[in-house]
Image (cartoon, rainbow, N blue to C red; front, side):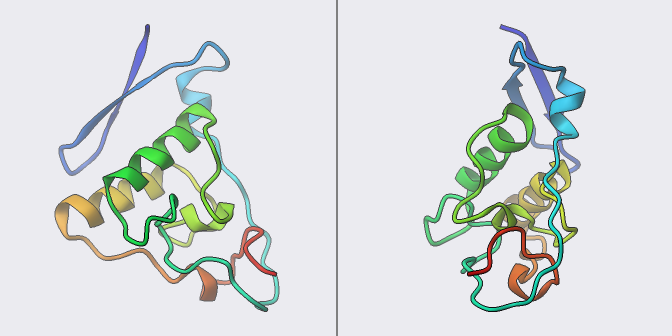
Amino acid sequence: MRMAILAVLTGLILLVPIVAEGSAVSAIEKQASFPPQNLDTCLVDMTGDVNLSGSITSADIIYLVRFVLLSGNEPEPCYGAGDANCSGVVNSADIVYLVNHVFKSGPGPCDFCTSGFHGGCIQ
């Protein structure tokens, strides 16, 4: 099985399998775009807690790696929950952001519900 290496600035190296469909580069560049919407009720309690465990841990990082690089399940409860840096897309930058937060005591994820990007997280 071929493996892709995702080296993160913090020194953490993640090995992820390359699936037959698409290339590693196209998988890394997978992004979901979020058009701004009016804020009614936001489904996201904690941006970055993509597996709904109640806290942000390495399990959330692995969940995002699978979503961004391997076409895994979307973040829960909605796409926007994975937008840790509130850029309006869920991509490898969000993975790096969460790695810095979890392993290097970096800043916590932004408040997605007030960011102006809501990615299907509004009811």
